Image (tube, rainbow over all chains, first blue to last red; front, side, top):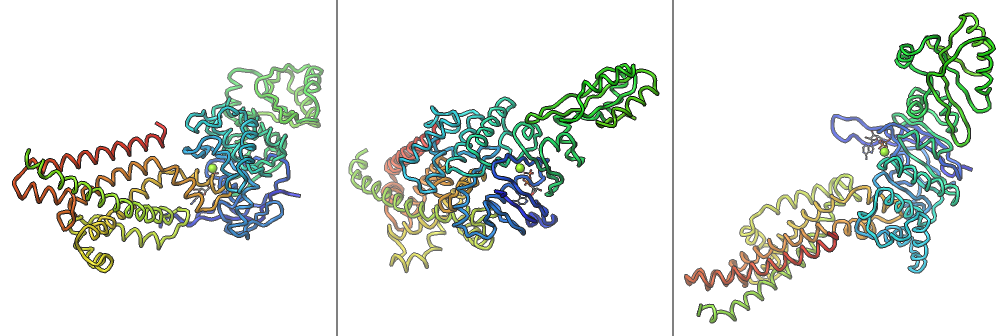
Length: 342
Length: 219
Ligand SMILES: Nc1ncnc2c1ncn2[C@@H]1O[C@H](COP(=O)(O)OP(=O)(O)O)[C@@H](O)[C@H]1O
Ligand SMILES: [Mg+2]
């Protein structure tokens, strides 16, 4: 059963000034997120990602549609029941949003105080969480004494305090440098694997999706334009916006400008072979080319690994007899995708 | 110099009266201003209890009363002060006048300091399951405490000023002391003794406020 289920959800904001119209931040979105998965939502700034994730813990009310969390439609809950529900849903933020007037330990204890957990139990739980995020010696520090990565660890510890079943991460690594991003993503991966917490990751960075998500939805103008397994979307994106995102981390089929650049440096016909896990191996392709006495040179592309599955696009410059090349491309084209640059 | 020694008990009494006027007014004005400032903060657009009509009404009231010069404010408030205090002059009437004026001044300072608390921090509190009220008292107010203390220190000086004026219009304290025994008797040294006492009081409070704010802000 889905742990989060959105059905025909819309969210509009009234016009902020007289000239502007109503903003449809979320436009008829349906989405199911399964227990235990890491679900990525990617889109450019303004696509509606932050709004969408705030519907899941009802920080924003929906305009229409239903949002089910753990089988309960939260759009109909009283304020009181909503507060109980929020203990089941942790949240972390791009700007960390720590309480600067409270120590690290008090930040982490906050959801426990809210939930009415007795003091002794709070102290025990905070120590456990500090340990989990690797900040056992920082309990008495204040947030402004920590680095960005440490702040986000505190944010994660605070979000986990009430033992939630779901963690919402809104651009949680966007304010961090690549190395710290890697560390924080590693921690989120542990949260998912060791604690079994379902994570919804919002980002505009494809490599975040690549490193931890199992499924992904691509958002544009308040709509989900494509969704599926991360491997499928990466290896064969359908929508132009998805292709643009994929192209930020994957060297795909070279576009016209890239082909021109390749032609200036290489002679021969420029052909791209697209491999996917389970398809024919690269070695077979090279064997075929050699057998047809076609010369080849690797000029562009690479192989990617997504959670143990490989795919990639290799672009070769082929030299030899034109009809022999046509013949061998036909043969290879029967098993994998072959694209020749015009 | 002799006049000062003769007047020393009167000066001390006047100092006591000023401290009394100022501290009671600061309590009433401080609490009232905090409540009004919080009301402005929570009802403004995007606020935690956003309510356009309530905000507009409060905003107009504050904008109307706040700029009234205090020397006009006291007579203007007479219709309100007389029924409550029983008289329009004297220390208690002046405490009421100062408190009312302070409420309007402080409310803006409170509102302005609270809006500097980042929205995301409120979101983090709400996402943790906290109610709106809890978010206000356990997150918003502590996060803004440093600037709030500085704001109240600033207001203290304004209240001392008002108390001196109030003394002129029928209250006691250092203001009336300086007028009565200094100015009217052509004794600048006596006037200046009141000035020195006021400067000392203000300096002490300023120091305490700064120290406390620094402690809260940890810098
Ligand atoms: N409180 C709000 N009031 C009015 N418009 C809003 C509000 N929050 C978001 N929006 C609008 O909704 C759209 C989606 O915003 P957001 O969800 O923040 O996008 P993202 O997180 O993908 O960058 C934007 O056009 C934004 O201007
Ligand atoms: Mg956003």
